[in-house]
Image 1 (cartoon, rainbow, N blue to C red):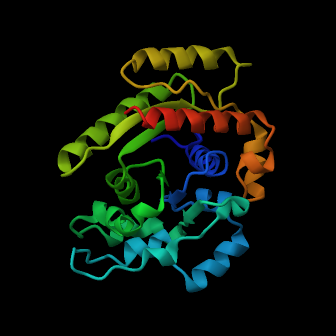
Image 2 (cartoon, rainbow, N blue to C red):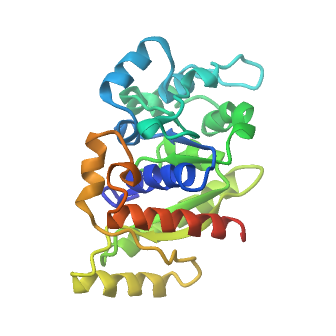
Image 3 (cartoon, rainbow, N blue to C red):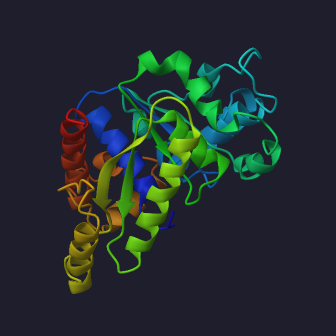
Length: 267
């Protein structure tokens, strides 16, 4: 629910490490109209060419304005860009578009609007080991679609005193959505501390307080360090594991991917 905590960097680099380091088949779905995950994995030129003949997530969502089970939906295969992030084999992307900004208005009176992404993904589930959704910092229709389509959610947290407030809000909202929805419930996979800077005393203190206040949550052991290499990697449209493979961030994301696989195998 808070911007600037590293949601997109976490999604993109976790996905890239799962594909590159652990040979998993991964799909990233960019649900944020700001398209940050998209431009972290493909260049602006690539995106410009793509939208002239192919689909984005905005197309998949908006072409379902009168969504029902019988209506023919757009072909999701036409929205998937293969081997992104500097040609990482097994790392695919459904790109976003600024038009997603208006999707809440377009779908305001559409029934089952939070299930559109889930229905679109059904035909390709067997093609991937994991599908990671990058959500905007709000509970828009896009975010609700991401939650409805998912089995688990990860909460990236920047360790600061105000972070605990957002944690309670997001967990309560997801509980409400679970009560409203039918079918399987989405469950928390845990909290990942991002932008972790041991040079600042407040960081470790805040992280300890958040962990103590959320003792029922799994806290990932791997902490993602604050590192300029992650920001610079975006300019190359490559994850940090390729652009700066020896950096602290690249090493941390590789460790996080292993912990993710261990964790998801136990829940």
